[in-house]
Image 1 (cartoon, rainbow, N blue to C red):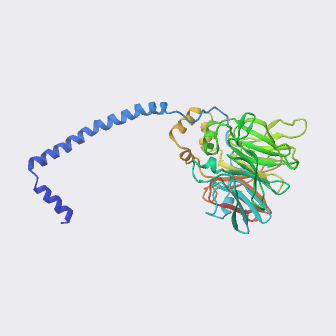
Image 2 (cartoon, helix red, strand yellow):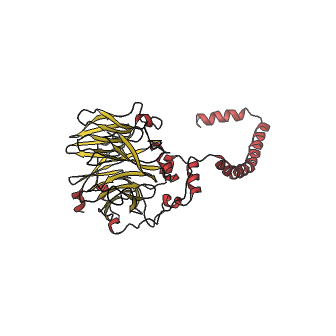
Image 3 (tube, rainbow, N blue to C red):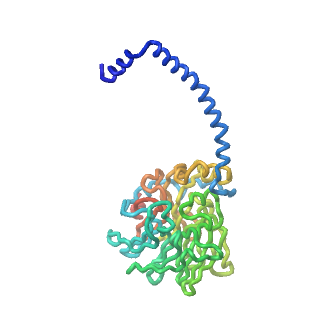
Length: 413
């Protein structure tokens, strides 16, 4: 007999028989009382939970919007494992390389810790930092900064859109930073709240998306679930140091790309899973039309492809015949209200299946091919595709690595 059994035995010997009977009675009685108590608890929960939910204020004010039935993955959308062939580079050396610029042997990207990185021959250095420490937390992100879209201008300077801090020009040789349009400056009565992507024209004009005047980058899930339409297209003229709003009422305008002849801009409207076309010249100058509708995912950034079209990275996939919470909830504002009352933004993302997807489209908006990671194990989502010399560099707003995919490996499969 072990020590514990001995201790138990000694205690029993010291007890009176009526004490033992009394304990057995109490135990039996308490078991009996637990049953109605449990029923009362369940009944109270059923009654009180809806009341509590009704009392909890919702963080969003959702509106009804229409999404078409998601496209079936066939033809150029036929599933494959091409993205799984991508190699992870600089793993755990950078966090969230959203946008990527490759210039010869030099690569630039912005990361979640507010840094603009310069990568040369495999060595990573900090080129510039736009915000101030501390960094790395939800609370510090607005002051730390979050560099998103970036491009090189014709003089070789890096033009950077920081989600919180504004538009900047960075000398890639020295790291010197010049604020072109700080977020403290208003545009049409509203300050920058969620600056996202940039495109630089040959005449020096800089086009930007401000994804929302209500939600900042930290609350981008709420932006989608609310279907907020306060997004804007902005134009900055460095010669006059002025910035103007040239289009508005867009639902999460995200990536933008100039056409080859710079006669129009393409704008990824993330919430509505489509690409808009903004005319810059001709009789339709200033007008907006739909360039592509009902995309197989929620588009993030858009960049040129080496075949004369465009690469579009998908933040999340939409697939015909498969349940999509995003599509299902689009016409059910009450459901989106309930979701945001009960779940945090991080928990909401757990209900979005991981599926890596990018598509290449022609200059007139036809899908040419698609690259998939059906399991999301290698690349669960893509923020941007940089196409350089037969190599695709894939960015992501949250992954701790950049990805590299050789196009030749796709032709061999």
